[in-house]
Length: 480
Ligand code: NAD
Image (cartoon, rainbow, N blue to C red; front, top):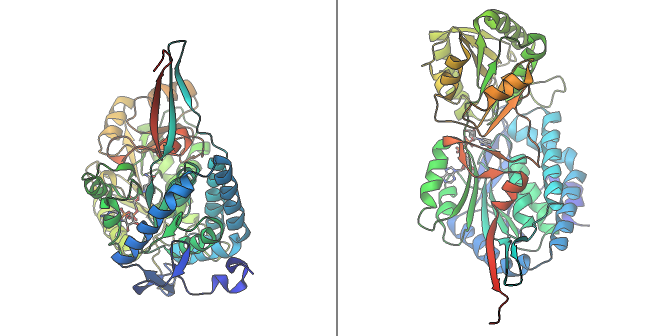
């Protein structure tokens, strides 16, 4: 019986995955369930020597792996997606326990992760002919980079891993994944599945206590860092990679504005704004984090959003009625409580309900109005279920305020006049601007941040190319 078909698979102690082997860490740290504040399990964390081992083994595996055919790699990626889906019930229960999100959303995250793997299993890396004449032939091909570090945050531990693993494997790279210290467990189980399917050394999982990301990001044998996390840490990764001119993808923070135009239909728009601000308890890089609304619609929108907040069901993600789980960790919980106090000080707040028991990192969906532009909730990325509603008198004024930030991840414009909305969308400084939708991701559509929300893209052909080295072959056909 293979290890992951064993019913004990999901109860066995967690191990690091290094070079296809399951190994103990240098020490153990507790992973906490954010709904109960009780430990979920002990997670092994690696020593620097174990990280060096993982890199050494990946380096040995790389020549063999990168010379497998594209078809062999496609087949393994499909097998991997299937094997993860076969265990989705157990994996999603584990994801809910460590991350806090409702079980149906944990399942959705893992399904989406598998869909991303399958998407990249079918993607192409075509050779591009640049010149083809009697005199010369010039073409561009793409090969792998080497060993890729996939550094992931705690809001979507599996989806954000797959954004990296899919294109990295297809293009023939070896990968070392480093999950966030508060959400490592589901990644370790997926690592165990990978160890059964992929050649040894192609995929390793290293857990840490927030101390090994910097080692990976500066290591001379790591060719690329694919990083998702905060803008602050992204700057450190940028610096760490400088000495070796590492290839980098930085998917960083956002402060996405939604602009509601005066002809918008609030029956349609208000529930969507609420959902796109509060999903995953606001812990989505591309969630709506500020709403700009014309004077005439302001009070109506605030009332509707406050009603939705009052009706929201917040609780433990294992309860099927729960719509919004806790925030993921105590540091984020403390940060949000301070932000909330500032909102109460400087604006008017309407909050929903949290469970009455005292345990768990619960913050109710909260709508903030009458808050000045220089308040923290407007200027900073809240990364939680607190949404400021800001009134405007002219679209130009709203655009200037929307664009007056260092961030530029996503944004949206809402209107019954789609061409007017699209014209205004082009004036927003963000990598993606949605019209009459927000937070829609598609494996075939690149996602990238403008300004300090990131460098490079994930998903789509652009996201695949980030894991390749382009090479031009330039041939003279006149003798030689
Ligand atoms: P974080 O930056 O604190 O941590 C992210 C990861 O980086 C973790 O695995 C962490 O251990 C690791 N890390 C810490 N220090 C490091 C260092 N010096 N070098 C390398 N790695 C290091 O982010 P977080 O708090 O876990 O996640 C929340 C943030 O992630 C938010 O700002 C959110 O907007 C952002 N995010 C962005 C996207 C996107 O696609 N743009 C998606 C999801 C989340």
